[in-house]
Image (cartoon, rainbow, N blue to C red; front, side, top):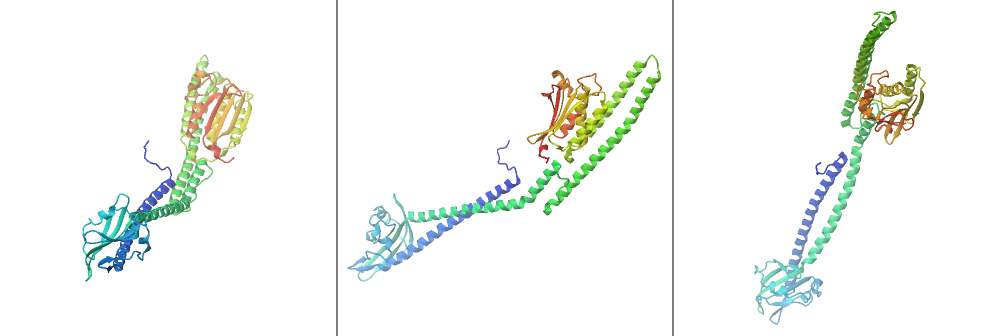
Length: 468
């Protein structure tokens, strides 16, 4: 079997596709929003730092021939010891001439790296990125030419801040973003499930109607609630109706054929009887009797077998549930008339009263099994139809001699008989087996625990679901 993921239902396919599509879409949206947010944070940081540079330059002044700035800046972030935002000024030889209070505890590594950065165009801000051992600093710097009567020279003003601040802000946004996107995926998926349930409801009802039709509790499919299912329902109804009509015509034709063939056979039997009674062909009565009976038996056997074989071609899927008791009672009456010289005790147990089998097939099954039981000496016969799980079990038991162990497989084959002395053609069990197989069932044999004779059973799968 393939290891690829397989979806066994249309609903799971749609839900899987929706989940995959939503996940991919939300992932792309999340990545785009995260990148846009990061870009906006960087842009806002750069603009703020440039503004801080101009503010720092505005605070600068000359005092006693030196560049001087106030100890406390208007922005309190630069005035906290151990803060995350820094500011300072270098002269043209790389000497730090002023630093904000927040730079007090910062590792001196930054001082060695900052002056060695490439010189920038005067009056133009440029980006600073210092990758220190303890942290990473991001900022802006600008070099200006200070030229007054008291002081002349190039001075580089800079502002820095720890990258941890930016990363913390980006991380917090990322966490909130993916939380909201995950929630959105869940809500949309739940909504999609309700939409799928509503959208597939007509298809689910259509499937249930098909199952009811297969079980025989529904004669025809409804036209359907949605336009797309109406053509399919119409075609299936036409097929079932045509199958039912064809099956009935076929059975009727077979009945007519059987009646037509029965007439010449009856004439032959009557002619044989007449000759036997008037004493024709004296001296050869036994040979004539045996030869005539043998030919008639062979003809009748072939007619019976071929007709029963043809009947087996009809479909069981067009049957409706029938009551079992009338079929059983009719069979008992027929057996009592056929074997009027024998006394048979009937034990009937029909705990399940309905079964989806053609009444003629049921009569053929029971008729063959019961007739064999009576022929082979049974005096008590039990017919039962019960329920085991979801299956209906039809069973015929008797107190006859049963079938010897070494003959059971042979007897189940076509044309074989366990007792050659009893009248019959030996095809009855084969016919029962073929009818059972047509309904997806199987004919089984065992020794009856109750009577000690034969016990034949047929299990019809799923028929216990039919309402009793």
